[in-house]
Amino acid sequence: MGKAKNWWVHVLLVIASIIAVGPVVWILSTSFKTEQEIFAGSTDINFIPNEFTTSNYEHVLTANNGMFLTWLTNSVIIAVLTTILGVFLSATAAYALSRFKFIGKNMVNYSFLLTQMFPGSLLVIPLYKIVDSMGLLNSYLGLILAYSTVAVPFCVMMLKNFFDTIPYELEEAARVDGLSPFGTFWRIVLPLALPGLAITAFFSFITAWNEFLIALTFMTTESMYTLPIGLQQFVNQFRTDWHYMSAGAIIVTLPILIVFLLAQRFLISGLTSGGTKG
Amino acid sequence: MNRNHTWIAYMFLAPVIIVMALLVFYPLIQGVMYSFTDMGQYNMGSKFAPPTWEFIGFKNYTDLFASIAAPESVFRDVLIQTMIWTFVNVFFHFVIGLGLALLLNREIKGRGIYRMLLMVPWAVPSFVSAFSWTWMYNEKYGLLNLLLTKLSLPTIPWLGDSFWAMTSVIIVNVWVGVPFMMVTLLGGMQSIPTSLYEAAKVDGASAFQQFWNITLPLLRPVAATATMLGVIWTFNMFNIIYLVTRGGPVRSTEILVTYAYREAFQNWNFGVASTYGVVILSFLVVFSIFHSKMTKANSNEGVYY
Image (cartoon, rainbow over all chains, first blue to last red; front, side):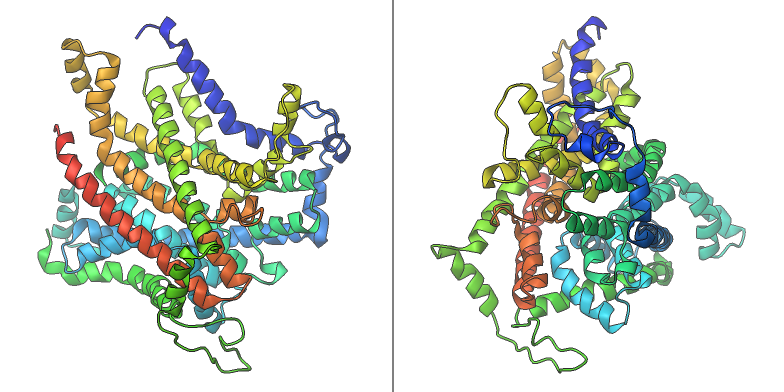
């Protein structure tokens, strides 16, 4: 391909990249602006603030008696525990689906796809009653259990493809050496599937970090809110506080964005093998 | 392999089956059951009062479908909006995703950086995306109207008018959904053996012929899976609509899932809301069966290797 012919490819990709990143850059810019600058009513578009300030961040972190930090803690605990449970559940299930033939295998396979079709609204009502009757409303455990069920089906499908690429001979050798099936799984298969497990972990974490509908229904005490719900309170309380919301949104987005950009190679290879083999 | 070790397989599956049965399949059956009741806030039962809801057979369903023919029908409006929402979104996800994947599949400088930037919308939490776009849509101070003013164009009532509100939420969801489609299709393209393209070049095939006769047919299985997931996810997309427009103005951006949520947790009609849920699930099951039949019937032409 001639180099000179490629300029239009770059033009298109640059435009697309600006559209992809623009909204995030715009709230980043808003988060460092003063209220006066945002609502000045001028038609100037400044991506670099005229007057650089960190007061929006200070306000978000200290407002409501530092409730934001409570929500942040809730979100981190719930997301980390969801990740651990999600990886455990999907790794065991994916291994069974990848390595064994058993009665009902097709049914299990199809039911994972089926769960993707359940509208949250259909599940949330009975789920609310079940979790309520178990006394798990406004508790971490209730959300963690619910979130793992949301994340697991996709993770199982992805991990199964990963396990499929691991040569079976390794496990046979381990079995001959006297390892139990569970020992083989733990010591041989899991270490080899680390990239796949990383994707699963990442996906579970994101699911829990971003989820909105279930948290909105389950967590009714302000001190138990997760960040998505907590930030929403900000909007309702002060309709037009875009500068505070922007600062809050950046604090929530930045950690996940950094991890995502670091992990994107893994993600692509995982999705690719999932896409072609699935 | 391991035909005799069925019990081991079940041991490995046990944790997932227990959790899913308790928190997915049991609630699902209950949800289906509720759709045949008149359950609401006052008869659902609590610590203080025993439940007094009753089974009312297919009444919720007959009411719902009878309303389609009525002169004013919320269900019909919402159903049409859901169809538009799903079709337009998945169409643009696919077209833009395919276009970008084709561009990224070329050997160009900075490919890794472009790919990383283009994946950003995927990494941003959906409630942050919703907030960020709502801010840009702000009629007075939002970025988009500022830009339009700069260009001496009339400003747009992004979220204030029913047509523009639907357009606006669709734009947000297209922005959110393109990266997944792009990455999946790119993965599919990269798994096509380069020898096919080399052979085509030897035969004198143009770039368009290569795309039409090699890339597209071989991409079909990946594209089929990705569009099916795309339709399912878009049909059930709650966050974006709920957070950007709350279904407004005057229900004009309400789709089945958001309306079902409103029925349940604002109007407290659990029975009716569950009926919506069953209708949604049935649509998607029928669609996925139809879709997989279609793609299976067509896939034979695509097999070259």
